[in-house]
Length: 251
Image 1 (tube, rainbow, N blue to C red):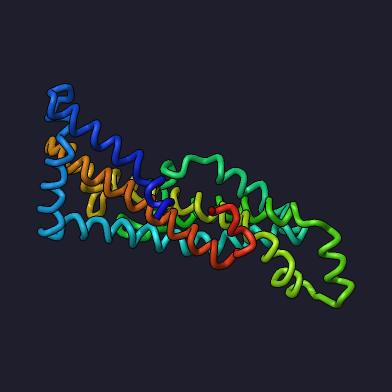
Image 2: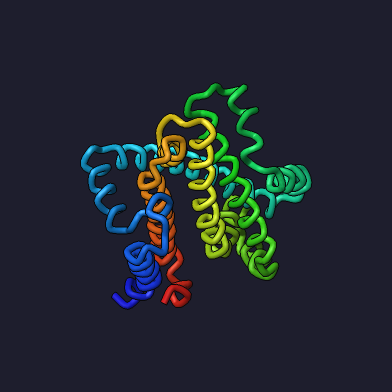
């Protein structure tokens, strides 16, 4: 309960200040509709199914790209950290991809994969892969050599080293990468929807801007922020269960 209070008091205070400023005429209602007006519009959009439909589309793209990219990034990061040849071969490429603006690759992917779902999901997966692989690789680099030597002395082969030494030792930092990758996946998903509007919260934002429907624009923005916060907290709760020795950091 205390955590919920700490998490909500600042957003609620900002909404209250926004409502007061709107009522006092400080904010232009054309650009900054009062939160009470936004709440009424949100109820209508939920009842019509438009908001939930667009949120589901964005979530679907985000989840698909994030899961594919994170799984690939975890494997690549472990291989780069554990095998010198893989590290020398892949580290420059991963570093170059990390420095490349991801949205600049969307036109190329759309040329190769078409204008459907494949291009944005691939881009989301690519962004997630880069972040998770770099964090996983960095985590493997920080493993104490004595742990590896002890495991080898007890007869651990390469597979056992990855499963029993590298992966457990990397999990705290891997989850940091996963949280960053998940937030980045949502950002890329919305950005793709802005560029190629069809469905999703990004599409809703773009169409609202074109029609100057500022209430719908704000609702889509706030819905995106809410989804990002829920996904972040969900991943933190999963980390508490999978990495219980890190539980003290969540209190």
